[in-house]
Image (cartoon, rainbow, N blue to C red; front, side):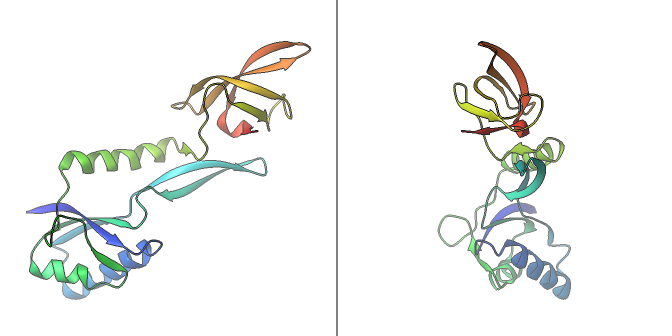
Length: 175
């Protein structure tokens, strides 16, 4: 029975370990025993030099998720892969993940493909400076944060009175 297992790798070597593992699976014809290898990543939006960019960020650095049937052969195949340091589990036996845990991780990956999470988070009461739009270079205080929309309500003093303005995360920066 195939289950999801967490494999620990050297941090920064996840891609290399995944590629090595895929090559070993093809060479030994273990495709029926090990079906999927995932590096858990999310898409993150950031603004640099006034331009919005979408980046990939690992949210479990140093780990791979492997959907496999655990037996002696698959265990030693993975343990012997360059870049892999071992399985996560109690004692010497690897512990499998529950289906609900894996569903949550996969859901998070899919959600960030649709709406990337901001690299910078904002909080109510924080002071920000506008970097884009008609209020460029003006400063204001965050009144409300709408993380699901990636937007903020900012009070900006204009002509001696504060004006609430809704702005995107990419249009402001922390002061």
